[in-house]
Length: 117
Image 1: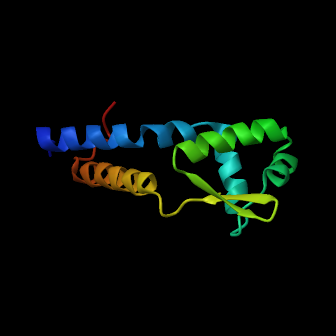
Image 2: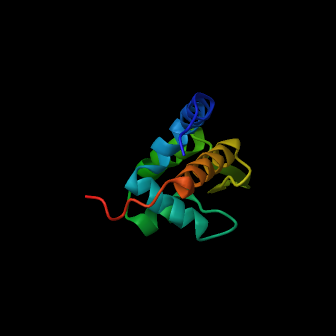
């Protein structure tokens, strides 16, 4: 199977639209932070994440801000507490899922090359 120019351009645009999210989740610390946030469906506070990760609150806040800017996490305020949670409704998240679904479709149509060196 060969990709046509329309498919290539579409995938190029999808990569561009996902670039901030891919960069944000590409960092190992932020990956672990996401796992901490996923661990509680209500979300987690910076102080709780910092304690679990053995990081300063400032460092956690910095990483949270990057994830928020990329559309990966959202926050909600309850009284004086701010809880952070994964944004499952994010357009960015759906764009990334669509991109990797397209990549998987293309890969499934390629011939088996496992015997090649």
